[in-house]
Image 1 (cartoon, rainbow, N blue to C red):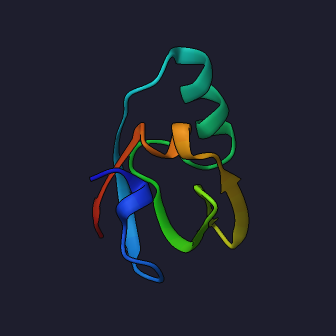
Image 2 (spheres, rainbow, N blue to C red):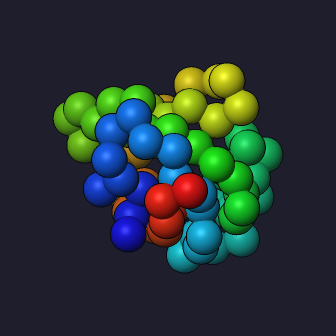
Length: 72
């Protein structure tokens, strides 16, 4: 499922990213690579905020739809 639809407050694991290499690299640099465990903190106005390694990261809706997750 896209990370945008992950249950709020529940840890999920990133299993795939369907974006170009530049976007994948940027996400990986922010700690959002395949295999990372993140927690969806909020989803407001189409954008989301996730917790990754104790840091809050904001992601826009278009990118969030390209990040596939599974319940950790």
